[in-house]
Length: 125
Image 1 (spheres, helix red, strand yellow):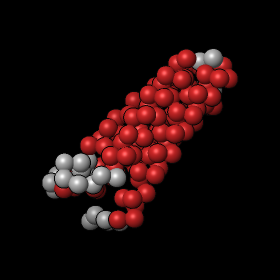
Image 2: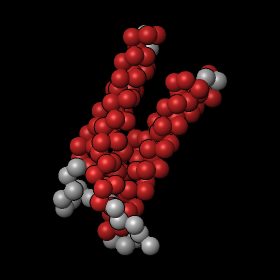
Image 3: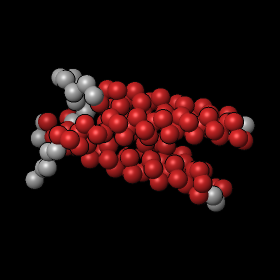
Image 4: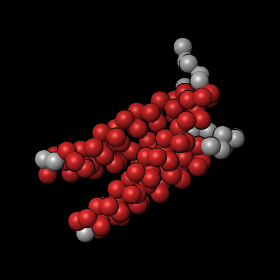
């Protein structure tokens, strides 16, 4: 049985904005603190994608059903694997391990929303 909670659906864009902004700001701080261009580029890249997905999640009209959740899920999955790999190579939990954990949790939420509110739920798959 599916639990359809309209309030949960409206909270997801806000969480996505916070997630994207956290990544972007973290990338800027990584560059400012350690001069890491990699942190700057990846933080702004993933942050921009996720903020765009949050914007599209608010548009719940025809044709906009599940693709923002699918893109956010792909971005979170890619970020999880990149960050987890970096954390295992360096042996440091901060910041790569924390980003991996956050990406994993948000990826679970996107997968849940995609199946409940997106194309899979809409078409009964």
